[in-house]
Image (cartoon, rainbow, N blue to C red; front, side, top):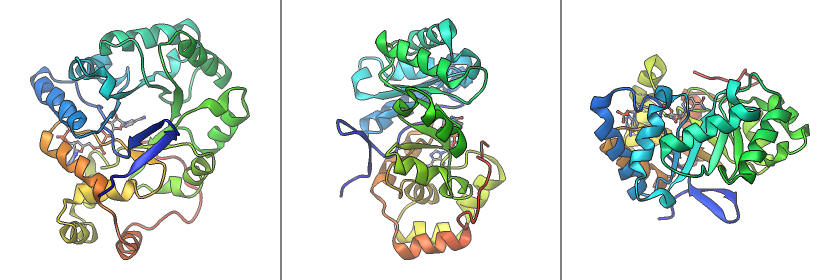
Amino acid sequence: MTEKQVIFTQQLRLPAIGQGTWYMGENTSRRRDEVAALQAGLDLGLRLIDTAEMYADGAAETIVGEALNGRRDEAFLVSKVYPWNAGGQKAIAACEGSLRRLKTDYLDLYLLHWMGDYSFEETIEAMETLIDQGKIRRWGVSNLDCNDMQTLWQVAGGQHCATNQVLYHLASRGIEYDLLPWCQQQKMPLMAYSPLAQAGRLRRDLLSNTVVNDIAHAHNASAAQILLAWVIRHPGVIAIPKAANVAHVEQNAAALNITLSASELMALDNAYPPPKGKKALDMA
Ligand code: NAP
């Protein structure tokens, strides 16, 4: 079976499922499990690890650094800069802080976490400086809607943006209307965060939904695996579920090999219809 991959460049292809880290590092009693889960993911080829200076105030990056001890080269490491640090010397200092906590000397990808304090021009300049300094390999953005991406594309250097990381799961499909087709047109991979809807009512609805569970049963899989297979059905979409539990990580890796049939996709469309018009970008 061939697992699904996402093409960043001709030289860089990654499995279409990576690993998130939000809420890791919040509680020291869970540290060992979190490190073990990330390492299990790496063992299974889930190379992309997504973190941020925001998560647990940097402690998630420390967990990732621990998980990567002696195996940095196996990972494609992504971190994110706060909007209020995304320009000038603040960006350099923020990146250096992330590198220190991650115990590495470079990031594979550095993302603007969301739009805010600095202009695109200032953020791009800082990102290019970090590339010149060898501290990051490439940069991207997060939580930008289609019109923001189009604005970014008009700015000098904006088209070097490597990805946009946005919320996407079966119960939140707004990006299918415009942002996702636009990214695909630019041949720019899109990173789907909260692919399992993280918490709350939506997550409970999705995991207990009869259609989702019938399809899971047919694939001898879990509902969560079907949700992931659904997110990565599009070319160029990489899902980054967070799992601090090795059994979850194993399931998530196995979801790379699940292909949903046309009739299964139609049944899911009926249960959770695609957008008929523009919706504001979802962030929670
Ligand atoms: P998520 O991945 O949708 O959900 C995480 C939850 O799902 C955790 O409770 C996890 O439990 C559980 N889980 C994982 N695998 C499972 C499985 N196979 N079966 C059942 N449950 C499973 O939510 P998320 O953390 O919000 O999003 C993923 C990542 O995206 C984040 O960690 C972060 O890296 C990134 N993110 C980025 C932004 C942004 O603004 N750019 C925003 C949100 C998230 P266990 O931990 O117990 O395994």
